[in-house]
Image (cartoon, rainbow, N blue to C red; front, top):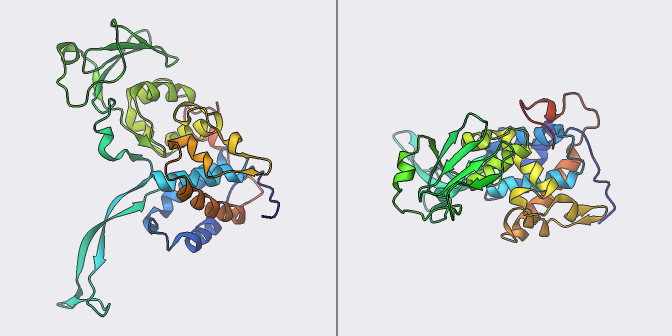
Length: 303
């Protein structure tokens, strides 16, 4: 592979990107034309982010999002006869509804909402006058969460998580807090109420994500969580970060999967990232004409 200068701080031309993306991905079984506007939103955020200074970083984020946000989508499919010709009845084509797994390129809920896992059951969250938050789990364990996102047990022997499907105890039922569930949400799946707390603080939103977990499905917040984690190794990334896999001539899309989910489907995502890299390289613009993303997100600061 010829030497390529991957260093880049600037925007990507969305028209060029979409054209090249369709050329590269139209035959991919995950391809979904209706997801292109969501794709453009994500590419625009990558271009606006002053902390994303390497084309490979953007390519890997796009590949991860394409894989992680593939969801079941119901589509109308035209029925054909044995000769492959469309069947028409009363002058109208005959169609059937089919469920396909297609990319959405938008923040999504975890399939199954974490059923069977210890974070599946909802908890009660109460904002307190001193700015801290009390979390009560269904098994009665209670925690205090400071404004800095640090959780401390309020009840003896408290451990995070509760048995999925178990009956809630009296302490939980009597707690006046708001009930919310902390299954996976976002471009990458943010799970557990404690991670919602620390992620919110990390991206400059305080305890907002703990108090309203649905915020993680807003594109700008989902992006901030993903980009910060992959740059720093924080939270979901388990200590792994871009600089371990992409620096100088090092280009390791396969093992970069460790930032999200071990080595699960690493080879598949590697191929997607390589294709996204080509598309991004062809779409670079070298003049900034708009504010960076950090000026564009209310309450967001670049950590």
